[in-house]
Amino acid sequence: MSEIENVVSEVKESKNFIEQIIDKDLAEGVYDTVHTRFPPEPNGYLHIGHAKAILVNYMLAQKYGGKFNMRFDDTNPTKEDIEFVESIKADVQWLGADYEDRLFFASDYFGEMYDAAVKLIKKGKAYVSDLSAEQIKEYRGTFTEAGKEDPSSTRSIEENLQLFKEMKEGKYADGEKVLRARIDMTSPNINMRDPVIYRVAHMTHHNTGDKWCIYPMYDFAHPIEDAIEGITHSICTLEFEDHRPLYDWVVRELEYPNPPKQIEQAKMYLKNVVTGKRYIKKLVQEGIVDGWDDPRLVSISALRRRGFTPESIRMFVEMCGVSKAHSIADYAALEYCIREDLKAKAPRYMAILDPVKLVIDNYPEGQTEMLEAVNNPENEALGTRQLPFGKELYIERDDFMEEPPKKYFRMFPGNEVRLMNAYFVTCTGCVKDENGNVTEVHCTYDPASKGGNSPDGRKVKGTIHWVAAEQAVKAEVRLYENIIDEEKGVYNEDGSLNLNPNSLTVLKECYLEPAFAGAKAYDSFQFVRQGFFCVDAKDSTEDSLVFNRIVSLKSSYVLPKA
Image (cartoon, rainbow, N blue to C red; front, top):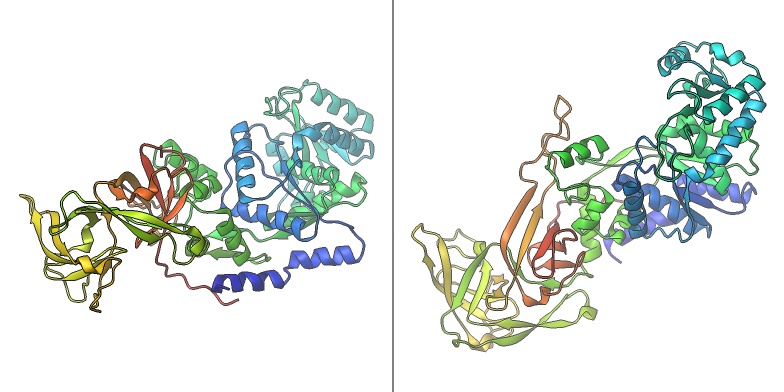
């Protein structure tokens, strides 16, 4: 068991505070099952923080043999779009949170929500207000001053029912009237000071079209959705802690049996990343990134395109754990997880990113031979492959130096090195162009050292990788760094982003061994001595391969003690 598996195992064995609450509820008979949900608003793309919400809810349902719902909280047509609905569905499915036939939309319950509002009016617990949004804010008071009663709060039940019906029928303009819950204008919790629960909005909804011109507010709709679906534990983030009394008030006043319980957990933050929709939208609009799935971002679609796996993200979420305390994880921890996941999964092939030609002067002209290579030394099941080898190869430019420093063990005139899986070769010199740039490196090989071992037992200190020039597959390779300049932090004093000008390097003249031919979107590989790479799903084609670097091989990240 690896170090990271030990940490994840210990996290699983010790129950978090949510599991302790669930255990208590089940033991006391509050609920006889566990039913969770992931309720995104379809107003943008999901990011790494949402992955935690998805997986925590899904894994809780799995652990307790319960149910998991996928529900779109689509109660605000001013910001929502079917594009976001489809992208969110793809993200959730990719992460492995299987909701089977349990896909729901809050908008499917608009009828029940309207009836619930009518019920509150009939109980004297809601009224139609004529105040504007600015006036409502003014009447609400402050953290130190109580609110003032709405002049409309004295209306009769009959008048409120008629006005609410007229709101539904489209008689009033946007903002002209709202429906407020009647709770307590003196409450120390501002959320309980007669919150707005319905507003007029003459907007076309992506799901219901123009059927409705009034829409419920989130704090009113969400507990109703949970109650209708039989959710037992409604997991949300800490900013909703002050909203919990209103959540409980709604399900209590509407008299739902076995009402759901809201539980708040801390969000998952990553250091030096951009998650704000406003900032990402600007990056997209200005062409700094090529979309919401640009591999430099941490939207789930961007992580998928870059080459992160669902298993690596799940591992990361489990490492971060569940708590009430805010914490900020290092991006290097996420990189650590993808290395751990891919090191035994990904084939290890050779790719030359900055090529210079290597000519073996004493190798037979026109001859090509096939050499056997192991696909991954850590996973025998991946088998072996045949490598073509000939007189002309490509090697990395920095694997040759005409005048090397001390402790440089790669190619230089007079030095012998091992070509991986092939032969010992001795560098004899190089050829340069008129500007002094090396265009060819020349060497001789020892035919008796086939397989990379000398029969006389002599040792070499350097081993380099290579690709046969004649059979090489040409490809584009993209090297990514953090889009944020980590030394300066995410934001400038004026609120703009501190962008890293070197966040993307595009290498057009890369040569890969023929085993890469036929690689498909999202296929992952380890480029020997380079890092882990993934076939780009947007720009790569069968005839023109494009690879994204997922992560380098080396890491400075130190796994924390459990």
